[in-house]
Length: 144
Image (spheres, rainbow, N blue to C red):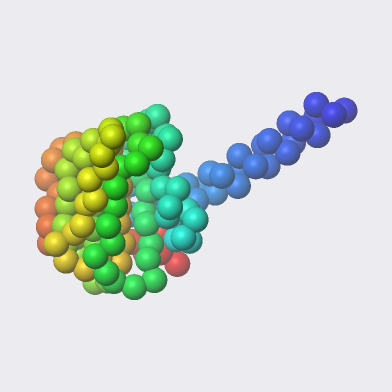
């Protein structure tokens, strides 16, 4: 009986953990990405740290209350990423490609312009799909 209760609790916790992936997506140039959203200070601070993989066409969307030059770094990351900054008008304002996890020193990545959203995807995604500064991003499924 104890094992069944523990199993039920684990299933419930996993469903909560993946709830952000259920229907949240962003689209750029007709390429849609399933995203986990990070909109609280805690989830933004955690980000993708300690993850050992990121599926194809998946990522994390960081949602901030206001536009700013939101800085990122790759502390405790295990995989390289492309980082895309998006302004309040849903236009890409900066991209950092193939950002490696940091070693002893973590470089702080600051966008050239203010952004309200930041999208992290697998390294090589932006090059593979010819994503560029100025491209529009459809966020309506992920930003509620």
